[in-house]
Image 1: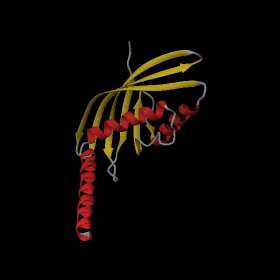
Image 2 (image 1 turned 90 degrees about the horizontal axis):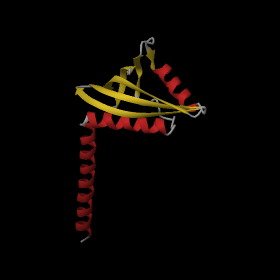
Image 3 (image 1 turned 120 degrees about the vertical axis):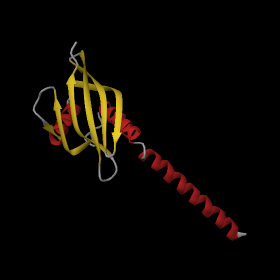
Image 4 (image 1 turned 180 degrees about the vertical axis):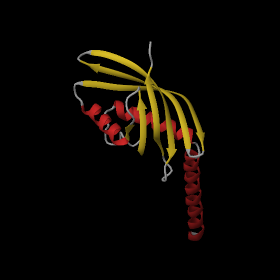
Length: 155
């Protein structure tokens, strides 16, 4: 009787482990969903001023262009993000609209619009920035932004 219970328990553990593995594979096999979730999580972290992992969305070899400014790098971006989150004189929030995600192998292109909402001295200003993010699959299987361009929309 004890062996039978042990066999049933072992089979149950094996099925549970396989089910978890299959669910994890499904998430990893859908890069567009993984990327969408990462962008959404970044927005939530930024808006909540959770600075601990604010640079995790970006690859260390990041290069980006913003509205005609000189090309910038990962360390420059991280410094700017941490500074923005630490500034008590202003509140900066982002809203996100993902227009399209195209995945091809280890690269993905995301067309999106970020709306920044800055509140300073009781005045609020919003600005839409249309952009193109290029994600690369990293050696650990994660997806990170390796290149991006963004430009404010003109009225």
